[in-house]
Image 1 (cartoon, rainbow, N blue to C red):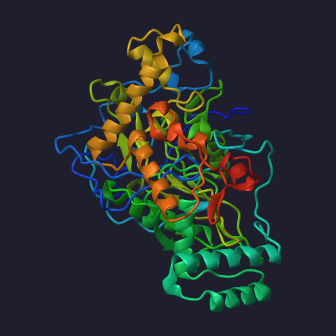
Image 2 (image 1 turned 135 degrees about the vertical axis):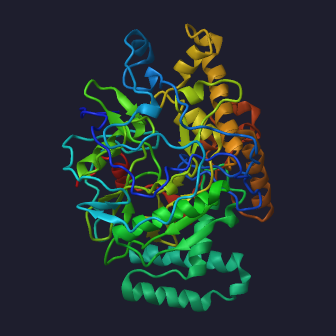
Image 3 (image 1 turned 60 degrees about the vertical axis):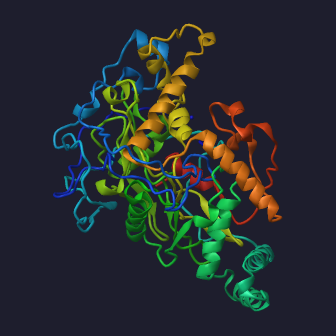
Length: 538
């Protein structure tokens, strides 16, 4: 379940691209034979609503094949600045996705995925490293701004973390730490009397102004933060979250490498694993690292001179910021993967291209029509939220990327359908021959169903874990029953729990919820939202 504006423009798409390193396979567009294992972990909708939803994997069709190279022209409506009607009157030519490359760019990918060899050592750029070779370039100078669907404060501010980016007064920290330790021992009686641990925590806070969680406390806190995510429908399997403890890491280079490993481990050949990687926390002495991207995998949004946008309008600001840092851009397609922008504890942000084998993608295909292949539609398989703070007992971990897996409507009813995202409903309705002259024809509803059918069909065919909104609604009600049976309060935000299509046909629609926030939790900080929009100072 997913939760806009562009400023002055810069020339785009970019004129050059960076070819892949020798020996690296293209980003895997998953094909047949990667059956999902329903028992291999479970997933979630991240609490900001822009990521994944829990659900068992679906079996792959062993006869299925999804060729990537047979892509027809992308509809002009993938250029998303002007209203759709104006675009129909003055169509803007778009390079077919399979041919959208510039000198030096890689050619079309093979139809079948194949394993990539071990990645070479990263090459450090002036402001980052990349697993691709190519000439370096200066940063493009342009103003940046970015809007989105998240609740964003109406202000712009420099986003360099202060020494105490998330500071609490000691009385509050003592109280939150005390509450958390008691919760941990209450839910895990094997740990015994919490008294000795409380004494140690309070003494550490008095001496240092902070305290360090044990590995067991970290894992428990991360899982309960998922359980407490009011905007997440997929919490039934909260206790299955795998926790990678990387609290000793605070430099940008190593954070970026570990984020890549996170994507590889979470992707798991299509059997998506719910996973969180926790880096160094904010402390009184120094801030923890930050990932500026809202997700580890996002598609670029290029703003052309005439104001058209190629790609995802949600990411225009971050795209322009990445280019200011020195990124040269991708081939200029609607689905170019953005680099990671990582800020170490004591450093300025650096950019890092994701290696191709870490970006698992699914080419989209409708079960009865060919428009999805002709338009070159695809989406990535691992929705890893990367700009939220994990707060456990008063300690903020500002860099803790986590993922579950997708619920189909997140892609088909939001990412690809929203008017300020890819806005595919108008061109799809026209392709289907629907009457778009009046909303009373329900052309939007009919196009929305077909787009969502294509998403679910494509993930199923490729053997990639995904869930649907009807299944997830029933699972959430099961989660409520389980938690209430254990005497635990469940917070939920109705406006986010209810799916964005067929709402009244799901059980979660027909009841109310208590939206009280509980701790531990995932939360947004204002500076993180500013960075994700690309509005932060450098």
